[in-house]
Length: 400
Ligand SMILES: *Cc1c(COP(=O)(O)O)cnc(C)c1O
Image (cartoon, rainbow, N blue to C red; front, side, top):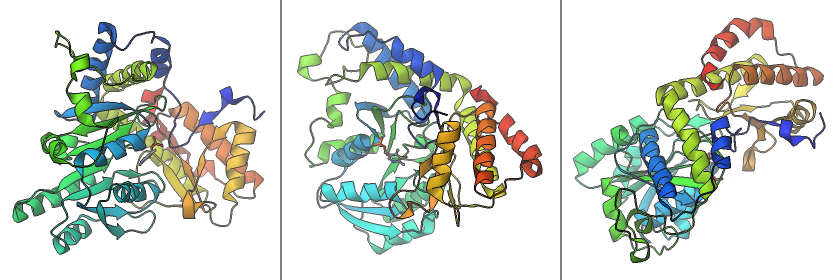
């Protein structure tokens, strides 16, 4: 295939992912002005749908930025210089929490974890017990650099237990950028004070919008935080400032600044469709896709990086095979784009995302992957795994 005909490229990267039909149609429908009732209605629908996706009765703020903007907004609104935070670091994205904290003068205690491993609830609570001054834990649900999934539910439970014993608050902030609408996530049931996400992963939409959920404790904290903030001051998004206040209150407050209007329309269309399918079906479908890719990778003799596999991305060690050449050949011969390793893992691993991929696309991936490996002297015996592979593909038929 000609490298330049990129309209035929198929994205198996862990964000941006291939954009859903609904998001593409939604993008095309947006000729709105953001100070109009039509836009207010749209924004109000999006906010309601985001709450349904995060499974929270709290507020969800929409920002025009990439996901990292929502991470920074969480930090700037919830922590102050001199505060102490605990961060399990197991890859590039959990390390980003530490970097943002350092930029805001937050004092970071890290739990260093090997790539592919996830933090254990006991290691989190024992670090908190050893340092009672720590008042926040920053977690990463899917560590996209390795495809490992944190057991957020168990970690949150352990932290809440400790809080009860200790009688003081430990704020839980979680990066759910690659897990919202991908893996099971229950913000209120699990007791996450602030979860952040973005438009270009599980929401199957274009990059450019970011979201943060804020529970009651987080909302209180916003008022007492002393960090400087302006564009990312969530109070501007939650309460209308005088300039934008209106008589009519049936809609949420206007966005304080010009939002990425077409993206609001695209994400709303995509998310409404995902909610129609049902969160549990969406989680199940992405899980089946990840299992199907993991099956292929293992059948080719590669070792997956993650112990606890996330549904958003499967990373695998390429061992003696040239990772760069596998990726390049998949792109050149088949128009399939996958991702390599980041930082220290560059050249050692490859990453393939199943988000939103149905049986047809996964079968095409299997054929291409097997063909590319054959060229490099590796065999992927499809006959041996066919029954199991087909069973897993059935699990993701909602995407077709
Ligand atoms: C993609 C991703 C991010 C970064 O998001 P940007 O939109 O590129 O800023 C952060 N954390 C995780 C876990 C991600 O997967």
